[in-house]
Length: 200
Image (cartoon, rainbow, N blue to C red):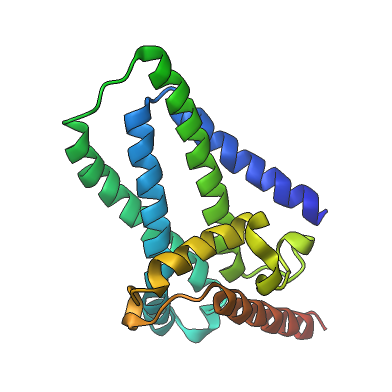
């Protein structure tokens, strides 16, 4: 069940992005890919303070739900700002490509956007209030041994590279992918314990 759900979810995300962007050209999809990557990195870099603020505002009882809300809120806002500002500005000087090359290259970049959205989306599931074994081995693994074969870990490692060296991010603290996964796995385990007690 875990495998089917994991692959089914990724299939939907990938082909939804591919379908929306396939008809676009190289330039447009290249800018969209950059915006998705930057928005995802910003979301993981700054969701912590927003999560704390939201917890203080709505109450500690919502602490298991708010991390994923915070990440997606920052991602969506950042992406919209980049698409409306950065993309609109660069689109005025749009590069021209041979029609056939533009179509093929645009399709390839649309697939890259789809894969990036899959990686980002699965990475956000680590902070979601889901069972630890929800997606079987795809969701519960030792990050030190996971490698880039896991789409979620791939995005988290890219984020670690982008934020770690320069300490860019909330509070000047570098992002650590392994620590992130471990911390929120413990939170999900804690939630499972509480849910089991409530069920009794």
